[in-house]
Image 1 (cartoon, rainbow, N blue to C red):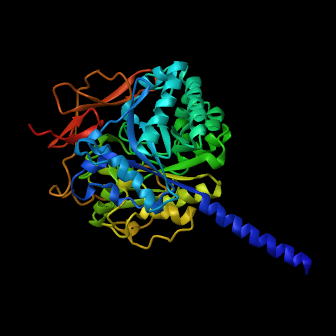
Image 2 (image 1 turned 180 degrees about the horizontal axis):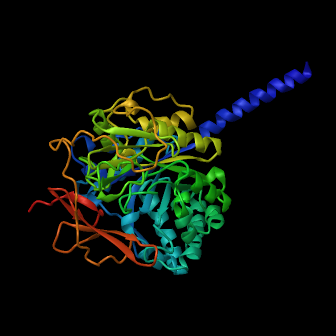
Image 3 (image 1 turned 60 degrees about the vertical axis):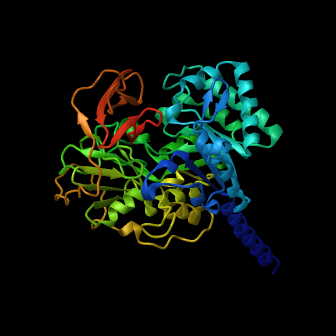
Length: 493
């Protein structure tokens, strides 16, 4: 009898422990503040955020000016001069969900690496930066700070960045501990990039949690179609491709010394889009001629928010395949192709994070989920993460079966498929035009403006110390914005 009582108590304790574990899983939500300028149903206001779905909210981005934090959009972020007080309204979300923590992020892709490398190389500048960050956080009433240096020892950085990055985090940690502030960082996921930038075991010592950017494994910088964030390696993958997936990236970080409870699995609420070279070659690995058409909200060639994708699929004239091997869907119609995540693939990623007992999940980013509920229930992807990791209610809508083709596919060949219905040109933006002649101006990886033109150069590494270049023309009515790194509406005179 006593044995049964002990056994019962152990079972209750295990169940309780499991419940506590679920409650403690983090759901980290990035907010791209520029989404307030998007048109129509894509325009996103801070008031649309449901803070109960996020344990941590991160406002992006601020920039770096020497060793100080620079506000990049004073009218949107600050209350001065009739500004919109984005910082204040963002932090006020804690009144709705007092347990939710708010952080301010610095960096991002468009900030590059060079000035971070320079600041981090000077011990005195690191200390001044740490002091300035604390002052900034306290002035604007955030709970913490997210460092998004993309990336140490890359994109204009130097080999010394690897050690200096650790020293920078150490300086921040010392100051933050005195103030009780949270320190996190967004990091490259795949071994092919992370191994160049981080001493993972040391980085992990100073961070409260690590936001693993487990996406952008494939995109229009490549010459063939690929899933944005495949969960697992596929049999057809070889070389670096075998590491360009979620599971391999997580295993690499854990093997290199990242504590599992600090590792937060990043999932994308957007897809990567391509323009096919031949509409009849439309599988994974099919040849492409550049980025896919810009969406009506995000207006960036080669990228589509989930809120744009689900609306496209509602028309039921797209072919949608769920690749069971990679655990992710892709869709194609005429010359347009997009690899993305839906409820099913997000659930499988969350289940992986739970199975591996990671610290939780992170989303990039909240404003590209279906936040209006135009395709069903509001925030279907974010709610799916909460359902798996925090015991929330399962999403009950039909978004994931809209437009689905019969069956799923593990086939990665380029066999001929039946023609899709042509794109309704009145509904879709014009496809970007790939210009035949490169400019030879690529000096790094990323999108670079072409002087005197609305065009831009999409620059990628050729793997031999040089660069591949695709010259891209923005869709009609748009012009390349070098500050945002995307096609944007032309400024009126």
